[in-house]
Amino acid sequence: MQFKEIIGQEKIKQHLLQTVKENRMSHAQLFLSPLGSGALPLAIAYAQYINCLDKKPNDSCGACASCTKYQKLIHPDLHFSYPFFAKKKEETAQLYIDQWRKMVLHDVYFDMDVWRSKNDAANKQPNINIAECHDIIKKLSYKAFEAETKVLIMWLPEYLDKQGNALLKLIEEPPANTLFILVAQNQEQILTTILSRTQIIKVPKLTVAEISDYLIAEGGLMSQQAADYAFLADGNMVEAKALVANVQNDHSGKFTDWLRNAYMNKVPTMIDFADEAAKWGRENQKNFLRFGINFLRECCLILGGAEELVKLSPLSLETAKKLSEKVLTLPMAEGVIAELEKAHYHIERNGNPKIVFLDVSLQLVKIINFKILPVGIQYIYN
Image (cartoon, rainbow, N blue to C red; front, side, top):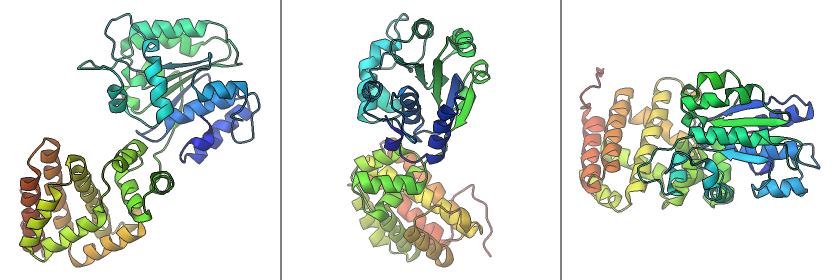
């Protein structure tokens, strides 16, 4: 994995490169990032650069003996640890290394649901057990086989229970030329004893532009559709790729037409829309509703006078402005959001989509055309 293969995160890349050039690498680092932001590929690229035999100014060479093995994740001095679904208490992550390598090499942007799908998890809960902790200590006690620096990358240390304290001495006083990289998503779920012994590097969410550019270049999407999906993904590349994997719909156009029809009280057209939406498939129905929820939250920012915080594409922003000026009020927007969230809840639980979309369509007519708000939203119209 080279830095050039990683989407965005230019500031973090430069920071990591600089630590190597200035020889000021902390032996225990925690890459903390929201889901789908690229912390794991950054950790792998960082390790590859450290052990590259022909370092370039801004990346590893990708061609030396070390890089060739890193690219296949088979370097003898690169170790991985991760939550797994143990059938026996003595099992370690090494038992699942083939599935792990295959998944990471296929697509380094993934989450726990994807990892679970690659294993015979059944109802087992993922965990990094005490046997794995002892195996880590054993691995890192050996001398390096080839590289100058041994590296262990632990994905999701949040799954370490109190047995993670067995690693404290190793993290605090590791063997010479050993690098420990933890890749985490939730700081609050990590043992405080481990947190206090690591240098935290915060990896920010990917921007809408970075995800949009990727979807256009690699996903073959048109610019408007890519912008809408990037907005919906909210910095999460895993989510963005999942959206592309589904049948692609013009969420922006369909949603604004839906609101306009509600405003114009076109009930027959709304009924036709419910029939159409029922044929989309559950994932696309959920994506459509989530797009609407996020879109209306941006409209709330416009209505609240905070337009500079809005993260919509230019075309969607223009539509949001027009709706906010001519159709929506803040109470309406919040009322519609409440109905969309309820509809998403029912679709997610296999509710009849035709009934769900017909019901929410009629609720939109009540809210937008007749100003009848859902219970619990207390606003007074002038």
